[in-house]
Length: 371
Image 1 (cartoon, helix red, strand yellow):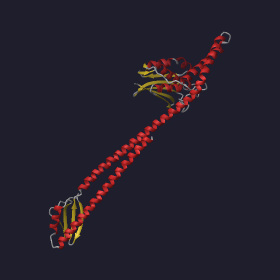
Image 2 (tube, one colour; image 1 turned 120 degrees about the horizontal axis):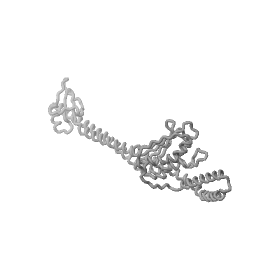
Image 3 (cartoon, rainbow, N blue to C red; image 1 turned 90 degrees about the horizontal axis):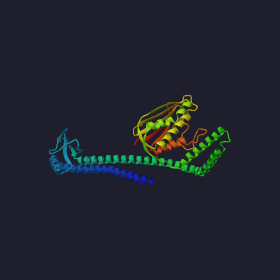
Image 4 (cartoon, helix red, strand yellow; image 1 turned 30 degrees about the vertical axis):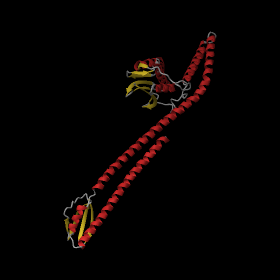
C-alpha cells in the first residue's frame, strides 16, 4: 500500500505544482503586457504633448508613431464633441483601449492584445488537459486503492478461514486415528456377538457405528484439498439420478417435489457434484420437518456464462450468517459439515453458493461457470 501511495502522492503534488505555475505564469504575463501598454501610452502622450507644445500637428505625429509601433494599431481623438479617426488606424473591438487627455483633445489608443489572448487560450487548454489528467489519475488511484483493499480483505478472510481450519485440523488429526481404531474394535464385537444379542438392538448399534464412521470420513476429508475428476456431464440426468435417491424418503415425509432443469452439458466432477446436490436436498428435507407446507423445488437454468441451480424449500427460514462454516449445525444430531462441503465443492468448480429467503422460500443458489 505504501509503495502505491508514495508515487501517487508525488504525482499529485507534481500536477498541482504545474497547474499553479501555469496559473501564475498567465497572471504574470497579463500583468507584464498591461505594464508595457501603460508605458507605451505614456510615450504616446509625451509625443502628443511635445507636438502640441511645439505647434505641430498631433494627428501627423500619431500617424508616424503608429507606423513604427508593433503594439499601437489605431487611435482616435475627440475635439468639440466630434470623434476623428487618425489616418492609418486599425480599429477593432478586440484591441485593448487606453485613453488620455491633452487639452483641448481626448485621445483613445488601440493596442493589439491578440498575442496575449492567443497565449492565454493555449494556457487554458493546457490547464484543462492537466486538470483532466489529474482527475483521471485520481480516479485510477482511487480504483487501484479500492481494488487493493478488496483483495486485502479477501486475503484476510481466506487467511482467517485457513487458520481456523488449521486449528480444527490439529484436533482432528489427534482424534481420527483413535476413533478409527475404536470403530474397528466395535465392528469386530458386533460381528462376534451377532448371534447372541437381540437383532433390533444390534442393528441400532450397527447404525450408530456407521454414523460415527461417516462422521470420521467427513472430518478426515476436511484436511485434504478437493481434487476433481472433471468430465462432460449431462446435468439433466445427473439431477434426475440424485433426486431418485430421495423418492422413498420424500414420499414417506409427504413432501411435494417440483423438478425443472434446463438441459446442458457441464465440465464437472459428477461424483462430488452429486454429493453437493445430495447435501442441499437433504438439508431442504430436514428443514421441512416441522413445516405445515412441505414442498421442494429443484431448478436449473443457464444465466449468462453460468449454469445456476436453485434448491428451494417452503420452510422460509435460514439458521444464521455462519451457515457454511464447518461444525455449525442447528440440528440436534447434525455434524455441521454438509453445507460446508457443498461450499467447498462449488468453489472447487470455480463457482459460488449463497443462501437467502425469497417469497416464503428458503433458496440455496449454486452458480457454476459453463466453460
